[in-house]
Image 1 (cartoon, rainbow, N blue to C red):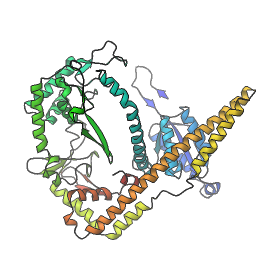
Image 2: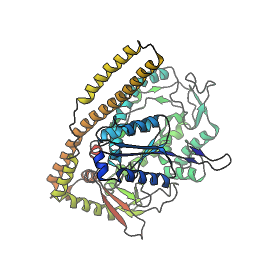
Image 3: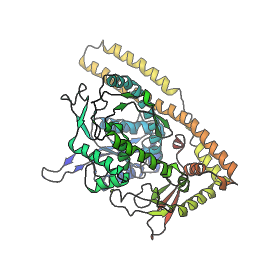
Image 4: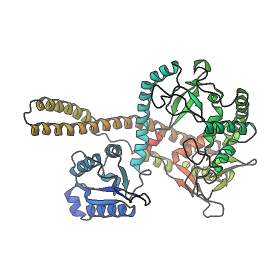
Length: 529
């Protein structure tokens, strides 16, 4: 890794490795440039991105893509990654790693655990099939693991709260730890006011009580250059909203106030009844605002909530909100904004301090009918929907030898037990090392197989869910094809989601004013809705 000399601007040049593969010698003979082309294009990609590639970091295999553990080039690549010899792996096409998505996922996950990023010459990872597959599958696996972690830690948290101690390692904004043993588990038991940050909290309550909006407060702090709680430059309205609702700031420290449940891809928090919450002793959290000011703010928050677009019928005049309309200039979601007369979709990226953006804006009443009519044109063609359903169902995970992994895991357990037993009888250091090397290989294969089995079972479970949802959508299309004008707001949005329709809007005066994407999602994403 090359670094500039002290006193010059800091620059890190990433070390890259290249992986190339063809399936058989015959294929390589028929297409003599296959391996060579993969290597040349991958090296050019590395050079264009400022990466360095040494010859010994170019790994090649002439081997079937159905297997990956037996490939010498892949084995050497993974070992080099574990040794920290490079930062990025470049492939020409993702299926050069492996034919099966499950195997691709195992390899990519292994590389990422080594701190190695995977990049592709011809495909963008986020848009590729393997990228979508890994995002959806690993999100599901991670959720299961989070539930296990939550269960293991809940009892410890409850014991700490019952002892009258605060939770968390980082103090709430506006406070700092008062304990002399701060930084240890025995410390961090109570707060004291942070001189500058507590003043910002008090100012926030006063500004809102006097009529300032949450967005105005966030913009004011951003404009004045006040650091955010994380040390950034741009204040988020969502943080101001949470701050104004937190009873800690009037000295009322309640814990276990909410629980959450997962619905689809998002968490939904549910308030716990006050009698089931636990209140910490007085003095643990000193008040920053008095109870009268806090209550005045809560009254205004409730009044504004009643008038917000998400809680009245105006939301149904914004069909494309929350992800179906994007700014063509920066790619960010456009938001629905009530201007007093109509609803506009606008990109707020520039006004919120994120920098360069041309701030596209368009009236919802103009773009919503265009997008829905486009969706209707797809739904009214039975061949279109049948073709889409067939495309989804073709993604049915192949029924390989599902008994292979459990069978091989059992064999590995026996082989490892035998190696351990015979290794104890070894009389020379070289023999013991040979046993250790064989054990290490088997252990690595075992880890890969266990991961592969978890992914395979997850795919099977989600495939069943996806099939049900796909057939429900097809039945809905067949039923309402001739009466789509009666579709409800939620039914329209569900149809847009299944069809993958997104509008991309340019600034007024630019042509074309908008473009419509039709990109049905990967089936694994369908299963998470």
